[in-house]
Image (cartoon, rainbow, N blue to C red; front, side, top):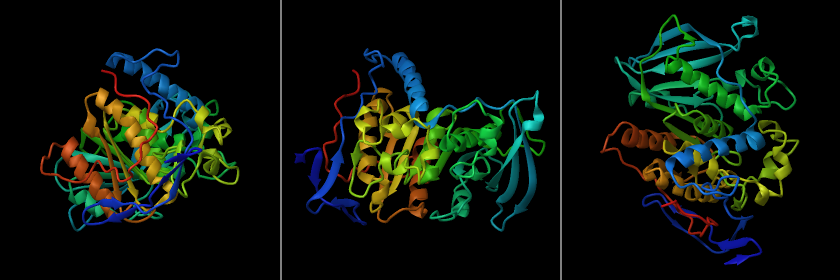
Length: 402
């Protein structure tokens, strides 16, 4: 039932054995408007072909950069890589501390700046699939998973995103200082850092790495992150097609959660862009849509759609109300027609687990199992990758073009 934009539905309780959700009565879900149609160009014409979609995709990217995240610079003229230490661990994997030196322009190399990468490489000769993670392993509410990941035969590259931007209001980080003409906000700065890690791992021609590059499987590069870093991972994958898969874990508003569909206790656009909170993560124009979300020309299903037809995964705790698990499912369903249109329906994935805000072993297991199944072609890799526990008719007024 809908009353003045409020849907009365049950609260979620999850059965951990069957992953079935039972919904007790009367929890309010706020719906602010219909999801915008990703298949309609700004001039009102419709996407009919895959070529049309590629043009529409560029239009969507520019719209989101203009309003939400700001415009990043192109890749730097050069990226120098220095391995400052390496240790062989008891399991045969190698842990290295690597410094990435970004040189925006070869004309003025003194404007360079550094950030640190923690690199875990499994034993063997490779090539290996690789996971780029936003932030150090095991920080905050994130369980350390480097041994699990290397034991599955993956490279694990965790970069220190706050080297690029300190995550403090009113402070200009080294990346923004080096590119003063760009309007990119903090989340985009961090995502741009993930792209530079991809430069290194994929051995792009502008990278100088005298100590060599780990043997990466170039069609199995994953980016992931939790909370604000989950937002960052999604941005990196949406705007850099070299990432073959992304896991946005507990991404909340500005990540995989909806601005238009808010479950009880969910973070809203107004919450996240408040002056005493995280307005600096976003373009300065974005906060004007607080309370006017129905006027936004996009919701975060457009970000999921930018990842298509590559692999888009969200992992969330069912009890993490602030991260808006109901709105995450809404965004997942609203993006599905794009994946269907591009003939990669299974590449749009979503998983819920019992619990609250965190990046825990079950989340990483889901990532690894889905990667093994879809990226590496392991038919025996299984998991529940398409969970829709909330029985709600979300306002999705469009379908995939024929």
